[in-house]
Amino acid sequence: MINHGKKITARAHTNIALVKYWGKENESLIIPKNSSLSLTLDEFYTDTSVVFNGDLHEDEFTINNHSVNDDRLVDFMNVVRKKANISEFAQVQSTNHVPTSAGLASSASAYAALAAAASKAAGLNLNDKELSKLARRGSGSATRSIFGGFAAWNKGNDDDSSYGYSIQDPVKMDIKMIAIILNGSPKKISSRKGMKISVETSPYYDSWIKQTNHDFSVVKQAIEDNDFTTLGKTAELNAMRMHSLTLSSNPSYLYLNEDSLRVIEMVKALRDNGIECYYTMDAGPNVKIICQNKNVKNIVNKLEQYFASDKIKVSGPGEKIKYL
Ligand code: 2P0
Image 1 (cartoon, helix red, strand yellow):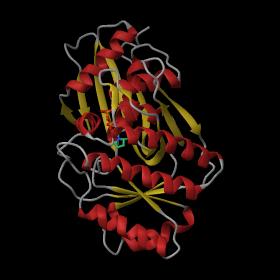
Image 2 (cartoon, rainbow, N blue to C red; image 1 turned 60 degrees about the vertical axis):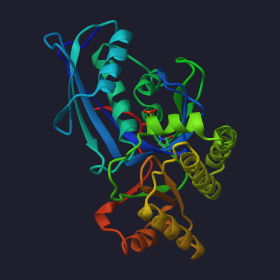
Image 3 (cartoon, helix red, strand yellow; image 1 turned 90 degrees about the vertical axis):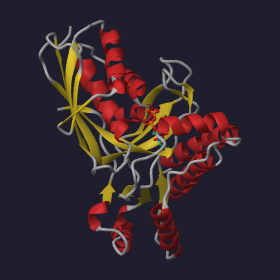
């Protein structure tokens, strides 16, 4: 039964893909072209509260206390209403605990938290797998944010078979991610638009899928073997392969900027000096450095020579979705 007047709050953490999702097979259901694998992060999360109210004439959304109108959010609430067989509108309040304009996959934690809070407020009692399928309808990367630690999104081929699952939580590997929050204008090409252009125009798209399926098996095995080196090397290559799709698209586009390249060179220099670390980037200029606890201090010291310390955020593995 719908939880009338009962406010439900959920917290979901963001995740960073080690094997990336970049392209859809089905755009309306958000079925991806390949399976992906990620690490959920403890430092970045979204808290979302939902309450259904029979007196409302439309859904009301606030993000960080600012009222917003967003068709994607309304479409998502319609999916929830249809699933729960209800017609009431809801008040949705969301707070992002992610540095302002960091571009750190906030849609992942946002739609995972919204899926959990809205479904429960609507009277649905979904397990994690069902929640991940619902979150997927909002944003692909949100499928993985239902789970903590290492998580994956099984590509599947329809609504039922395309879901997230846990690979390892709690995480056994010593692994940290250092995010460097770089200044950049808001992205000109959304990931949704970017990946569509890549699927349709990059001559290398089929090779990307073939290689990424292989990378998925390699990273999964590296997690089982507690093999940080193989995980880091493969994740770094996978990120560069994804960004080469942006460069090889028509029109060509690029998320990285000169600061991103500077961080990449710093990572390489650190490696040459015996400090093991790797880089990964998503649909924006920020670089995330994959490293181990013993090297965090050294890496942060190096980064602080170029970047303000409040722009350097160290995360470890984060936990799965929870109700507050
Ligand atoms: C990922 N990214 O696997 C990849 C790597 C960015 C680069 O998923 O269209 O916001 O909502 O499904 O999930 C970002 O795209 O895209 C993303 P939609 P989403 O994390």
